[in-house]
Length: 301
Image (tube, rainbow, N blue to C red):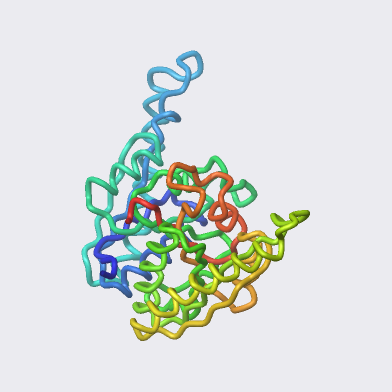
């Protein structure tokens, strides 16, 4: 069964990075005819500084400043959404630890997808590691479309994805991501490219290198065939091939070679469901991709 996209959450802090993410979220909502929820979280850790530095009226003024900034951020994105959508647009300001508040909102409002920029007020030079987006990617129970600051700005409703990349490692995590990739490809009328990576660096020095390499290629061909069958059943154009080298490097190279404008992949592959995103192939791709990456958690199984 194809995943449903009826509600999309767009977190924002009013930054340029958040705006780029919002454009993609609104565009997806326009394409899927989904409702949009816009959320800005006032970080309570910043409202409550040490008493020796802030107190009384100073604390109150600081709190009001953050509340006003959050409301302006929500109003800006919600206003943009209302000009492009026929569905419901809801704007909310909440307090708490941002990534926790985002996840709680997802559960409370039955959100299907989160769309957000990978860089916010911390600036374009800060790596994803340690940011709100990275923590959401680690912990979200629904797919997250992570939009880099380098992604092209679009007019919502006109930002069609033409080429979608679906990496596979033949794992359960890859399988559920492929379901989402097919849904998005159908919505946008996109071409699907799929890639399986055989990391030959892991075979160096092994007496059975040739035998193992052949076995991995057979697994890869089976994995690609499975994607092709699912694409063709959905009347989606598909092409696939086996790459050689570390998976993240192969995925990023494939993205550039085929003018990919969206990558869809699971947050956990053969490393298992208990592994955090940190250090994984997905995290490396999100850090380095110039296009949005739709990260699908294993909880979608």
